[in-house]
Amino acid sequence: QAVGHVPAKHFRQIRRSAPLPFVAMAMALKIAGCTPDQKFAFINDTYEPMQVQHNDRPAWVARGVAARYIFHTGKGRWVISKVMDDGYKCWAYIKATDDASPISPEQWQMAGADGNTWGPVSVSCQSVPACNDKFVQLRMSLDSDMKKYGMIEKEDLKKLWRALDYNGNNVVSLAEIDKLVVEHCACGAWPSWLNNKPALMRAYKKTVMHDPDSHGDDFVHKNEFHDLLLNIFWFNKLWQIFSGMDGGQDRRIDVREFQGGMNAMGLNMSPQEAQDEFRKIDVNGGGQVLFVEFCGYVRHRVNPDANPAFDQDILEGEDCSKAAYFTAKKLEMKNQIGLDHHMACQGGSSIIGHPHGHPGGAPGPSFCG
Image 1 (cartoon, one colour):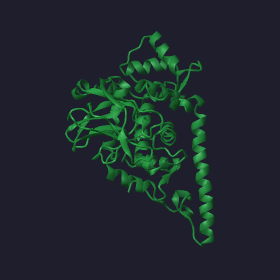
Image 2 (cartoon, rainbow, N blue to C red):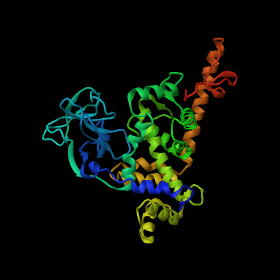
Image 3 (cartoon, one colour):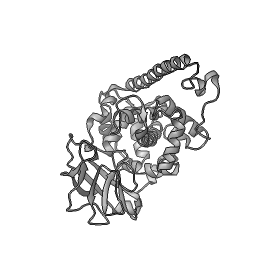
Image 4 (tube, rainbow, N blue to C red):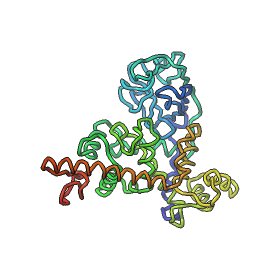
């Protein structure tokens, strides 16, 4: 049977997505000890074992839906880094005394505030049981899905960024990101389920406000691009689940819809258990939960040790997301007015901000060839 307006087979696929034997038997790693004043304090997290290896050794990824990996460089070090590569650029490293795990009597080394001076830090790495929660397993599917659609390898990311940032100023707006998603889904390069505006808004907002590389403005910068793509995948997966629960298709769910959706995923709950869980989301007691609130619930479920301030914007409701969108649009228009004026003074014209990216409505650059 269908749950809401999404076929029940979608939930059956999630229910069947049990971890592979390698994941089930492997242990997770818990990194702790970084203090808030340290530049890379965000590496504090639980890292779940990945279903792929790197340099023929196990690798782990942050449970907190962020581009943070623990892997072996192949040259005598375990590192914590944003990208699984040679590990030359990383946030922290430790001398490898075991090819199977970074747990070691050696001391972790981390860069100082200047990003260059390395020194020992009181960081601990302990093994903890891997988590089989359905939402954690959903998070663990992100990297393999992204690789399938060309969003992991450096060369693929460079090519995608060049197409997105066609004017070469190393920042992109929400409108440009939306155009990228729409065109890639329309031409079949990406799956159609990646094109959902509520999910895109959450992905954009998390990237520009909360991720470690955030510049604190309303634009996504080049070094934030991988984070953005990860967030786009994650929030669209959550939107699929949420919209499947939403039988009334009014973009909000009640406790009955919540229980039905969780049961369809294999997370069977009694009416009382569903009521207790629902109260954790419905903090104002209104009896209805929005997508942003559901995202906050899942984030806490996936990574309960994360900073609770991360969800502060959720308490403000959807209006905060709309405000961020219009702020980005106004900044884009303001920058465009100044650019148009400059070009007019030079006797030229600007292609940015006009319909389809070119003056007179001429076709702009296409993201799909």
